[in-house]
Image 1 (tube, rainbow, N blue to C red):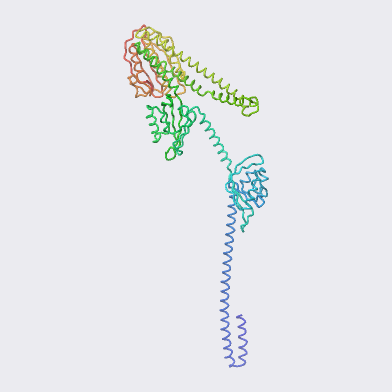
Image 2 (image 1 turned 45 degrees about the vertical axis):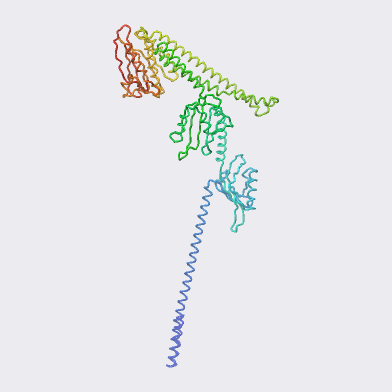
Length: 631
């Protein structure tokens, strides 16, 4: 445009030059007008260009922003798609989407694996009728169609799924309507959590609870159980009530139980309760007497244990009650027997015999006590009660007994049960006979021991010339039952030895005490290979009876104290056994000493007795430490 203006300028100028100066002035003014007009056009054009350029820049900016938003939306969409795909691939619970015809659109990988498919695409287009039993598929279809009609979701519905191969699974299902952008229901989708293990656990828990109730009600020992959050009422089984003479109609609280405790035992029981409630212990056991409403006295072994929460508060309590009346009576009879023996010995003026008898028959009486308790327990646990129930059952079907035994499922179990019961009673009979035989042999053994002691007691204070082998064998025979019961290997090294000049009762007292203490040391040592060795040695003056064990051994600090009166390391020891043995050895002109290499290394006791053909001087006993525990 500027170029065109320039051309128009020169042409008129030439014309004006030809026309003359008057025209030049006119032309000049016209050119000035044209120049100003051109300048205005240039300004307008520049402004227009700037406006268009700014407008284009704004448009480009908007396009860039739109492109950025689109890119972000696409990225968000890809991210959401990836998250959805990751969720569908990884979620352990089953997820699925269905159309309005209840056909699968897609599902999670776990859903496909559940049906043995390679992937979700294998399930697309199928219905429940193709993957479940018809009964389950029909119920699922009706449920989904109801959601399509009403739009009401189903939340947390336990479903029992039966597969075509017979497998049964339990699923906690939630089903909801699937809507399009306009809110119209176009299908359904669902979430399922496999709860088969939970259902199995619930069933197992139910079965265990039934088993617990069965054991609780029919246990041969008394059981009382209480939850503190349910109050002070105790649940007590039949045996517990029977032991205490209680009926099912009576209350089962602490006051009722306390009222039955013997007044002399009440303080001990309350102390046990105090220790448990104060948190000093979570369990305790005591033996106590109960005075029943009919006046009978019953001994019971009561064991109480509690369960506490994190704060230490008792939340459960269980008590076990055993009827030990028969055992206590047996113990009392044994105590009376001991007392009778002791009284008889005192009357006869022979304290040595009484002490020897009590020491020697104690272990055998323990075996007697065990046999008596076993017989009592076997009688209490017999199945004779089952026979009474079986008899009642047969009487109920007396009119149709044949049909009942052959056609009724309960009756068909009667004969096999009788076979089993017969085998059980036969075995029970054999066990009873074995225990009775053991009891008879132990009683005979006690008679032999008493007879032997009585023979020795006749010659108390009389010095005789005797064979040491015979004395050792008598002592071993009196302790044979205890050594066998405690699984002690007995090693005899008894070569011929010269006769000794001794008093029989005193030598026997010493040897029995050494053998018995060796047995205790072996028990305390805890070894499996418990070994007790008894051997004879002699020289020109002495015959030595050496008793060795591989038990707990002797601590160095106990050396020099073992023969001290009253010293013992056993809880039930009296501390005069070795002391009196050392005195007896000295009175016969002999010695009693001990050797040990320390704890865990066993101990050896050496009894030295004078030979008959040698005159042995009296010697002070060499005191040394006894193997712990000794008494």
